[in-house]
Length: 487
Ligand SMILES: C[S@@+](CC[C@H](N)C(=O)[O-])C[C@H]1O[C@@H](n2cnc3c(N)ncnc32)[C@H](O)[C@@H]1O
Ligand code: SF4
Image (tube, rainbow, N blue to C red; front, side):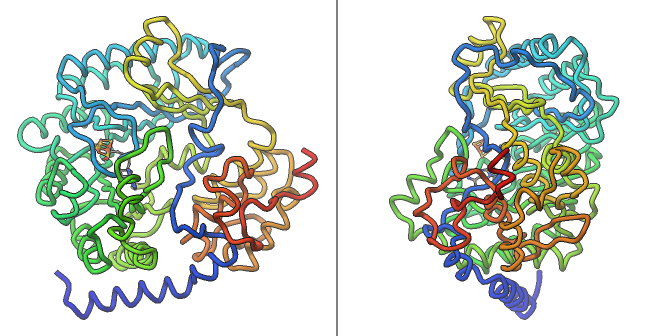
């Protein structure tokens, strides 16, 4: 455990970082919303903001050319209980028979995609099985799922196979058996939702585990010999303070982990479902830490991680070495690979189209598959404008934009399309560029989600114009040049 003096030093270093980034000035300029709420930039156009499919065939006229540049996501919605901050579509019907029924439909869905995508097996560069709680499956069910995937995909190009986990499901002999099955069948990275290491906060979150169980689960993952372990933590939850967060970070970084992903609490839902946290914030906003403390926690996470030898690789993901990043995140976000999403509420980006699987409930999902249809209920065909913005904003949030690659993909120069907005962001110390690349500065990286939204088409912004100051960085002001507007 660190001394009070070094804890104080950590807090002071974090406070200095926040002061240097000066969020108050950026709020006055219109970059940050006035109400202090946060919306993450996950994809472009933002997921779920697409039209309904209205019975149309989502793949009409489509020919897949991205088979060798794709990632694969498989969604398992079952959870033991609902966490209070969770905005995901989940299912609490999780008896062995319920899970078997879901796996039956997943297998049928994979077959449907394969036949609709020309019959050849998808050849993903990375795989992520997420949830929900994939590790709620028994060892036998995990074996069934992984075997079914291997039989339906060509995994010869797959460089990372990740599974999301929840600590309580990995404990004891049963937990170890699940981990061994996963390791034997090619899983080489576990991304575990720990969320907090303070039992009072975990209780408030209604997590199914305590801090000691999270630590024990990390030991189990190591015992099973899984090559890479990453944990997720959330800051900004009621009851958390900068001091407690400092302690959490110090404990987390002393564990046998390769990476940690730090999330600011999202109160506003980013998809179709609204978690309980939205209503509790509306009723009692004072229970939540004020924005100054949230920024302090954000800076603290970064300073603490860097002092322990972790570097920020991909936004908010701190790793001991670059090989411990999420390849899935890198492949769809930085390399702009296609993504094939299987399972209820998952999303796909294939060629020019974005497809959302139904996220209403399992009944709707099962009915579509039983009818021999892809379970897609929303489709968006990307326009030229969408593609120009996507090619800028997703890589910019990660490692930065190669100007040559940008031109190859869009046929235009990034400066030609967005020059004035780039210049404005450079003036405020948020972006930097040289002949080859465009990237976020440390200040821009601290507000990465809001900076990349500067390049969104106004209809895709999460908050209306009046939620931001009427100043030069109000994101509703047109970001493009005449060339963007002409198309
Ligand atoms: C795709 S979710 C995985 C969900 C997984 N079942 C879990 O909770 O462990 C990845 C991570 O997002 C984070 N997350 C989920 N909901 C959040 C919210 N409302 N605010 C901030 N982070 C959130 C959690 O850290 C979670 O582990
Ligand atoms: S946060 Fe994760 S574990 Fe909790 S209910 Fe949501 S999906 Fe399930």
